[in-house]
Image (cartoon, rainbow over the protein chains, first blue to last red):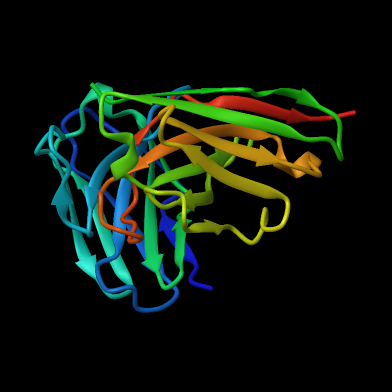
Length: 109
Length: 123
């Protein structure tokens, strides 16, 4: 089974800072990688699909990159409303299976 | 707008059963695969199951295979999760989610989520 890891597990940054989260797969997953945002007490929200494509309506300060085993999620200028836990997720269709990373909690310093 | 509303959660004893429902609106329900995802208290997200647009194909996480059954009624725009032989480790918030694509038996991820329903397994 493919394992997903994320680093750091948590971070604290100032408003306006650039924030970067990494996600690593235990084997090559091409670009079958999504990112989600979960604010405290709320359901997750779909942000990025296929590693680098922004879902409709998601602010352009969010971005993703990578392929193979190493992926990056970036907030170019952290805003107070970005306080949340961010999850990467691998999707597979042979057979269908979805594996989430452990999450990265982002706080304001 | 797309809306998913889960119901059916509650407190149940170990070994007993519970059925969750998810009422969908704002999109053509019968065109999309649907997921259940859960989140144990203070923990991360765990995918539980997915069902194809017509209910003909169903796939499960190993942790629930043989105990949980996903189903749907397209005439009622409703998704279900029948949970049998419940264990303490099944305690979680259960979310239903619409797949992000309408491809036939191919799934991309959870494009829209409901607000969740809480299941507590305890004696």
